[in-house]
Length: 125
Image (cartoon, rainbow, N blue to C red; front, side, top):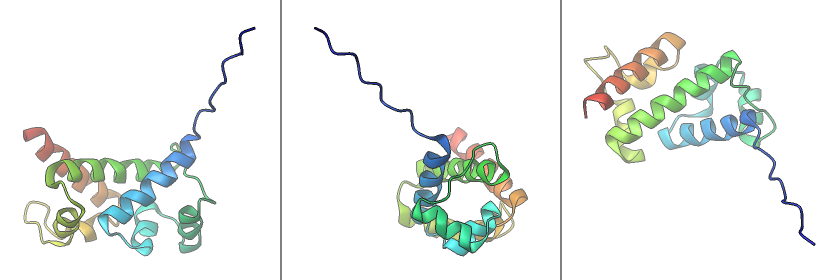
């Protein structure tokens, strides 16, 4: 007799997003305080996010900002290639952006601007 196929549960998108954004923040050298500012979350919520006790609904404001930060991470990683180079790029003054990317991404408008800048540079290469 044939065994029924086991169904693998589909991953929870909110849990996947939470894990991905904390890994990206670590890769980029963003402290928890900065991640909280970027996502608009309290420090306590960011702590729960890192502990896996808080999930990010992709449709929420924080979830949308997390998706944008992941897009920034992917673009920057494809351009510079190493965590060290990504951190150095974020720390450096950027004439094209008019400031340090690390400072600019702390607000939604700056996060969009830096992400669009990186996407445009990635498209050229």
